[in-house]
Length: 118
Image 1 (cartoon, helix red, strand yellow):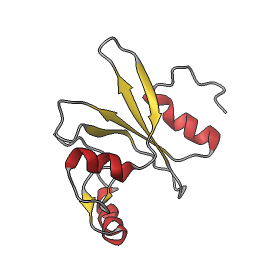
Image 2 (cartoon, one colour):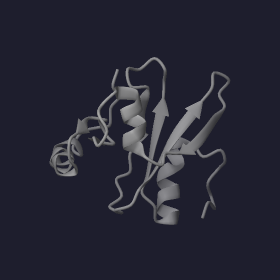
Image 3 (cartoon, helix red, strand yellow):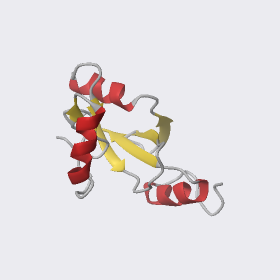
């Protein structure tokens, strides 16, 4: 349901999209100037277990497009060079060797603002 939402959907409207469609939506940006290239733009605070991750690609003319991220860990791994199997925190992009270790990290990381890795 996209009623009341302007297109193209602005980052500030992602929370509305989540609420209207009972989703957990996370959005990431890309910049070739950053070390990893990938950075969080909007991380959901929803308690839904399944999430949809999208990458917002923009050009220098102000055009932008959202694309689905099917495997977030693979995308970040490609940019960081971490070994396969790493689980990454959506908020800080830190890599962990197991889901259990990542979940322990999330307890503290969820208390912080999202950040870019430069």
